[in-house]
Length: 270
Length: 356
Image 1 (cartoon, rainbow over the protein chains, first blue to last red):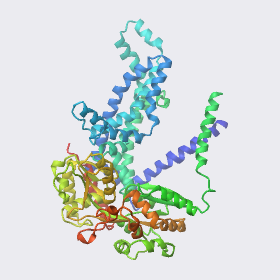
Image 2 (image 1 turned 45 degrees about the vertical axis):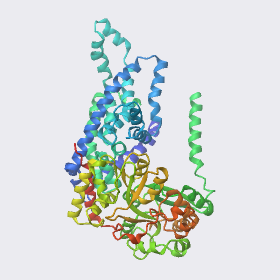
Image 3 (image 1 turned 90 degrees about the horizontal axis):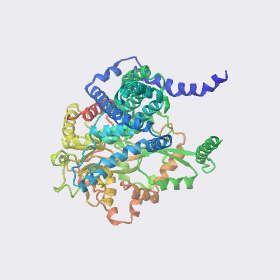
Image 4 (image 1 turned 135 degrees about the vertical axis):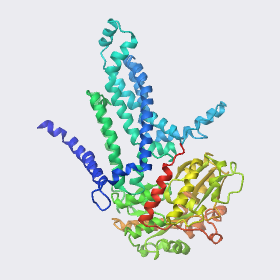
């Protein structure tokens, strides 16, 4: 009885801020302006503008996820091999930028990348060619990688520190070289961390609209931008909700994959 | 034990920040909820209003008319006073969202706002029942004289390949189409699908030359020498010239948008009297002057204009152009839901276009 009481606030939270909004999204997504049932809002994903935006979002978030993984895995390995007092300091340094607001960090990149921005002024001073990536997809990928990298590092780092050193020593005892130890022991055991890292980078990257507006100069339409516009500008909540449902399918596929691999719930370690 | 102390300290800071602004004793006369454009008021005037009247102002900002409308329509935020532009006021009147003003409570608005501005307001508020003009101006091209050598007279310079990646366009649907429709010689209130398709094609052709579609950032980017040409509201032009003397503003010869932003009170406003007090306070000459000097948007307040000390600004052709010179200035009108949808669809096509 007592324990049930303790879960009540969470239950309330869950219903008020997750279940009810979800029902509303489905209600709006599956009705038209008169309130009649329709699948039109979902089928609208097939129009050239929408499918292009979705395809582009998938592509950019996939690239960002791969880059994050390539950067994060070696970093997490280095971190996990450090002594206790050292690694907590490095992890702190890594989390420190997250204390600043996400929007401010992205706007800061705008100032850095601009034509007469900090980076280009420096390059110009050194007589190096200018870096012209602001308002292009490259800047968007950069923004995604920069903002979401910690979400990849931390789960991988957590799963790596959990590996029992004795297991690694046993592998070495039995004659495995360091490459084989990595591929046969460390990598499989850290897979749950990798999978939850992928989810935690891929999902926010797929749905972002702020990064593409700020670093893409509003010239590149991602699916997040389309949905945001439908709600804030066009005032067509039905279409916005319908497209959100389509986007949800991609997110759920990703979640199911991570549930299958991530049985120990590394994703909760944050 | 240490952990509990830390937790306690956290709670104390959170609770104290929450209660700090919740004291009601300071404002005996209730509240007024104001929803205005971003950076469109001198914050000092809000404090003065609160001090003089004892009414607390809850102040929020929006970036475009289109983002304001759904929020106000949804009614979740209880705003009393809003400051939309001409065509949006018409849309709100059409949808029965505005309250009629009681002019007896607005002595400053009747005395100080120039009669010609009320006359212009009749384009969207035919009987002057709903709106009090707050700011007005034109839309034109702001250019950097060190980067653009030829004289700028026409919108067509925004399609000149010489300035590729150095052009800033407005990131709001009607302002963007206005430029293309005027360049083509059509009315900026066009609802003709063929004309709009033509405008869309023109804007798609322009997209590879455009550096970015932005709203408020045109100002900072032009000051920072990021771009050579930008479409901008006249009110921003004076401010940008103050910060960067190389910038010049021009009203293109094909004509442009002449707009008015006006205070309105929402129909379901809970604090209508306070809202009227707020609007009237903003029409007081000294307050209107403070706001003009802060935001540099042209004021329709004739009494305030008289008080401007700097003669160059009082007679500036940017802030107060001689309107009799132009015969092709238009004011946006609300085009109805069907045309709105068409505009938005075409806009999406422009935004979704990429050359790769």
